[in-house]
Amino acid sequence: MSARAGAGRVAILDRDGTIVIDRGYLDDPAGLEFLAGAAEGLRTLYQRGFRLVVVSNQSGVGRGLFPLERVLAMNARLQVMAHEIGVEFEAIYVCPHAPDEGCACRKPAQALMQRAAAELDFEPQRAIVIGDKESDIEFGRRAGAFTILIAAAPPGSGVPSSGVPGSGWVNRPDAVAADLRGAAAAIQTLSDRLPKSPKMPTAP
Figure 1 (cartoon, rainbow, N blue to C red):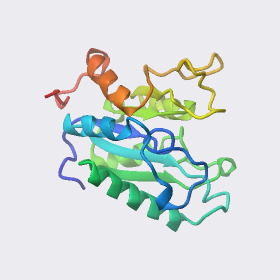
Figure 2: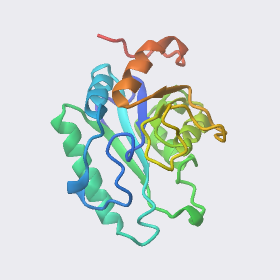
Figure 3: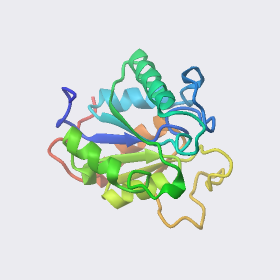
């Protein structure tokens, strides 16, 4: 368990389309690249005392496109990239199943949220969930967490260029940002709307 476990608020982040460029079913660690604003946003959150956790659906494994070992190699590379910008992820959780497998860990299901909360000692309803898809927002809302949509989503995601979720979305985010840099700024601006906690980090 991290030395930061139990201290500070937790930010739970999606990987593809939120932290790194979504390249589809990528299985080559060399292809990982931070999205614009992602490095700055991660640094800001980390420096403010947020504990950073990644939760990602990686159905390429369940679809037979690549083995789980490739996903683990990708996660190891992401940890190195984070370290290079002065950030550490406390943990990276992955659902490897295909959508039709009916597992309990594919977002928006809550198994990975519950596992992370148990292993890292935090209350899900005091977390902040950041992602680029409606399933990420539903994942956060089911847990009672504050949710932020990254609006710079790829075509076909259901998010129009205005950055406002489509009218067909059932789950609406608490806030919308163009990238993680904007998400970090939104968290600071909207701090009075976040669940109160004695462990809430204060801005420098």
